[in-house]
Amino acid sequence: MSDQQQMISDIEREVAYTRHMIGRSAFSHSVMNAIRLVPREAFVPETERRFAYNNGPLPIGCGQTISQPYIVALMTDLLELDGDDVVLEVGTGSGYQAAVLSRVAKQVYTLEIIDTLAERAAETLDNLGYDNITCRCVDGYNGWPEHAPYDAIMVTAAAVEIPPPLIDQLRPGGRLVIPLGRPYDYQNLVLVEKSRSGEVRERVILGVAFVPLTRSDAHRGIYGVDRSESI
Ligand code: SAH
Image (cartoon, rainbow, N blue to C red; front, side, top):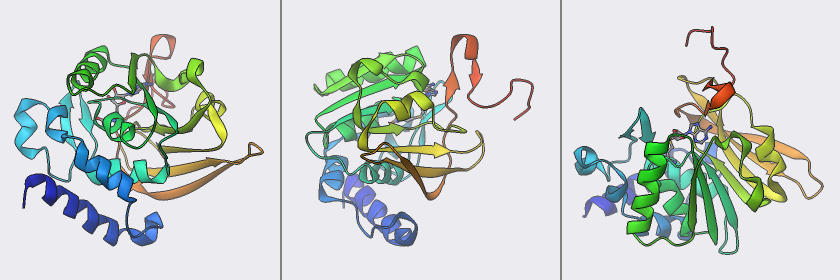
């Protein structure tokens, strides 16, 4: 079995273990196909390459991580995307999640606050020929109003609450997925559904551990955490 096939079967096994929490016993064919299509080794530093197909997170520099493949697949599956959808991702990191999203959606807009990572991700995605992903280096708290509304939004950094601009930029009937909770702790992966009439309903899926959503400029620091608080 190739390393990639092993990763696919590890994801499938974890889906089976967690099926009661995640409300599904398998991810869609389109999501699993996207996972098969994206070469994860291209998104990790050379020193981590031999672990690229382990079902675990890996360091990508600047204190950040590429998420565990099962979590990437789960978050993608929860958005229930189709080929006409436009998606916003907050937290580009390596660009891997954006690449997976780009295989199941029409267009992906992705925001990263650390310029080194934003530049590297844009280069990786460009080298691999992804032409429906647009990257920008900015504080994603404010979303990307120019391309709103989005059919789906994915936040891949932990926040204490859903940034209100992201709710505003989600189209009625759209879905948003975000890890909510204290930084440097476990969070709840939360699925947010905005009804056609604009009401917002939240559902906790399962416990996760993400790096924090940070804020730039005047807000510099970790979103929702008082700077005097020690974490
Ligand atoms: N989705 C990524 C992994 C995300 S790690 C991947 O597939 O590799 C979380 C990322 O969110 C980090 O790169 C971090 O720098 C970024 N981040 C944190 N706060 C942010 C903010 N306010 N706006 C945009 N990106 C942010």
